[in-house]
Image 1 (cartoon, one colour):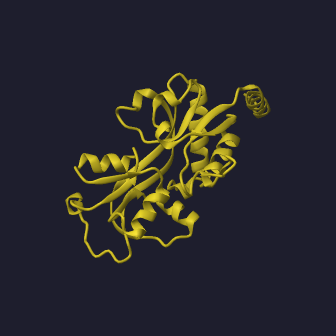
Image 2 (tube, rainbow, N blue to C red):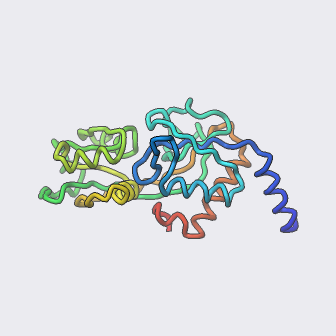
Image 3 (cartoon, rainbow, N blue to C red):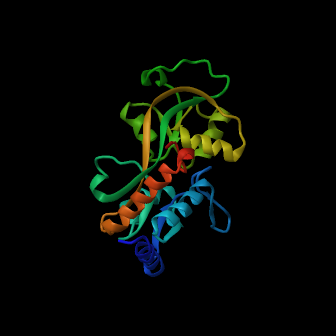
Length: 232
């Protein structure tokens, strides 16, 4: 197909296709939600660039974090950003990405003196983690005492106030949350592995649409535009 014909086809698709709902949940430092409901932060910039390079007309829509994780929150043709791919989720969605990659990191206060080299070293400690996130599941799998919070900023405030001993978080999300708040970075104690996050679309979403999103994210990564999200 000639380049001019391809461009015409893409413009036609963008102009006539119904907007695709892209569900996002409030996440300090990534998706910032203003009091009037507008979505800002680097995540919103990334979605706008994804719309531009993929040709898919995206319509970001805010949902509470707990609701975002329920499959019934998605309608056919809609997507959610962001989820980890796990065996129980794999067949529920069509996947595009990843759009971010980060390290599971344990943080303590600046005056923390305990050494953590393995999960067993955290026994008896109070550990905050994001509710229903991979980090919270990681704690449960190891029989550790996790205190689940609804957002990263709340967990970091609890750590600084001494209400918990540690914060177990995605280092990319934690870094951006700290950048947005201007608060001091807590002490990094240990890292336990990586988390990759994807756009998850309803299983009945058009395969062609999902492929456009996947190709768009690949293009952003090739451009270096996902480096802020841990994908150089």
